[in-house]
Structures are given as structure tokens and as C-alpha cells.
Image 1 (cartoon, rainbow, N blue to C red):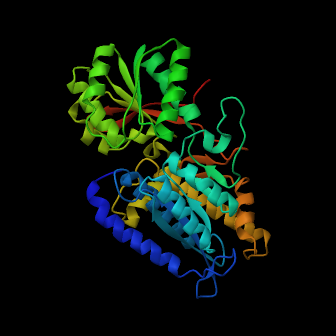
Image 2 (image 1 turned 60 degrees about the horizontal axis):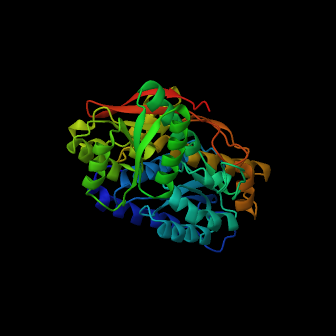
Image 3 (image 1 turned 90 degrees about the vertical axis):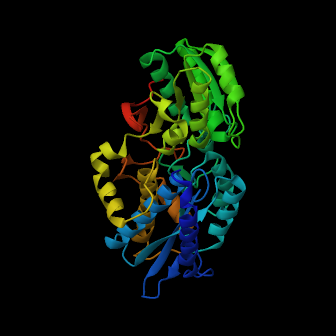
Length: 410
């Protein structure tokens, strides 16, 4: 989600990504494609918003997955296999994501997919991939229903075995934020706002449940149109409610202006959100009075993790024009998980991909475990990340600064 001026760059990158797939045969079964040098090319699809408001996060996902593929090739991690990525733009739209999913499925050289960013987009893709037994690993989806079913609060049922994620869920992130706001920030009255999308509404709901359980009071609720820019009416409601804090379920393109307009209305109170607002663009949109606003994000700060030092150095050395953003480390680990699953399948089949590679790779993913950029990477029986760590960030001196890391204690 960084500068909007990246759109032109993105278009060129997307065009280049399409060229990568063109080298792959579409009638080669589930075996990748002949690389022309006696080896096999395995394509890892990447789906993310590469243009539009959320492109900073999407481009960070794309570049980080690309770095994983390049490192695996440098290390000759899977003998006889060359990894490439095919990155496609979903524009944060479910319909585009579903179209991309169908395109990936039709290309038999694609043996795994990294993405998407948005939970609402993932909902449109899951069945397409599952029907094709094509494994999908998201670095960013946090909607609990994606792995645990629509009735996850009462009975957890995994809907799709081809879906995995390296990010933890809103079932943990929302309550974690509520505990920080109530216990640490000592805010007892909250106004809750969401953007009506899968991610935003789910996050707001889990925050609200925990905040009330702790003894906090919700003094107002509101839904906004994610395409709107004028939130003055909502800002006035916040001001008149007597709220000590605003919790926003949504993403930074709306959260920044919302925070700015709430302060302008006279409510000098912090806005708190989830990982969807934790991008440097937020401060540009929210203005100087954003100081003190808070965001939770999955995992620990990549820059502070000893396990991420090599990733940070490699990313810089690779010369990508865009930052790795909030999900770069998770995207790298998602792509690496696909690579590790491919390695398991190849090793078990005498050094070659089997005819039913997609099904075998999806099956192998369940047992993948490695020390990744973000820490230990493995998956539970629902396909969820076993790493449940989260961090609270505060805006200080125009930057997101970590103020507390830990896990939700329910």
C-alpha cells in the first residue's frame, strides 16, 4: 500500500510476470514444464493487489515471493527444478481474484499459489483451488472462517484442505487489541467503526466481544463505505459519543482520512486498527495528529527478528523498487512453504515430479515445517499458522513503533 505513483511500474511488472508463465506448457499434466535445459520449471502463482490503494502491500508480497523463488534456485534446493513466479493483480476485488484463480488452475505448470492479501478475495478463490487440488498459502488473510468455517465460534470445521496461511487470525488479533486498549491504554469507552468488508467487519466483531468481556463500553457503532473519502458525519458522531478511543476494522486508505477527520471534529482520541492500517502511507493520510494512533499486526517486527536479518539484506540487495511492507516476511515464508512441499514430493518420487503433483503437494503442505523469516513455520489441522504472535504499534514521530509483542491469552 505505498505510493499511488507505483501504478505505472506495477503495470510493467505485471506484464513481465505474464511472460514468465508463457514459457510453461499448458498440456504437461501436473508436472511443471520443460525449462529447455533438461530441468523442470515450477511456477508459483502470486495473487495480490498490484495496482490501486492497497498496491504497497501487494507489491511487497509479490517481490518477497519472487525473492524466495530466486533464493531456492540459487541454492539448487530442489535438484532439477527451477522456480518462477507468475504474479497477477486482483485489485483487491473478489471477482478479479476468482478470475486469477481460474487462470492459475488452467496453467498446469503452476503447482502452488501465494496470496491473496484480502480475506474477501480469498473467499472467492478457495473452492476454485480446492477443486483443482492446487495448494494456496496466504501471507495476510486473517478472517477465521477461511480455515474454520462460517460457524467457527461454535464449531470449527475446515472447509478447504488446499488452503493454508502463515498469518494468524482475527479470532486472536481483535481480542489482542482489546486487551491492550482496555488493560494497558486504560481506555474504557470505545466507538467501533468498520468498512463492511470481510476483514474489517470480522476484526471489529472480535475486538468488540473481547472489549465488552473485559468490562469496556461500546458507546457507538458505524459502518462506512470503503469507497468514500468524506467521513465528517461519522466524525461528528464520534465526537458526540464521549468515546475515549475509536476502533476501526478496515484498511489504511480509509483509516488515515478517518483518523484525521475525527481529530478535526474535536475528538482528540486515538484510532486503533488491525494489520490492514499498518502501512507508512497511513501517516501521510492521517496527518501530524496521527501520533498515538495504534495498530496490531501479525508476528513480531521483521526488522527485530534475528531470523529475518538475511531476508532484509537479500531484499535490499535484490534492488526491488518497493518496500516489502507489512507482509513481506510472511509472503517469503508462504512461497518457501510451497517450495518445501515441492521438495518433499520430488524427494519421495525418486527426484521427479509425479503425474499428480498438485494433489501430492497439497497433501505434503500439511507436514511442512521450517525455520522461516517470521519464525517457526508450520500449520495446524485447520491450515492455520502455529505461530500466534502479535505486536501492537504506535505512531511516534511519523513512524510505526512497536510498543508491545505477545500472544492473546483468552
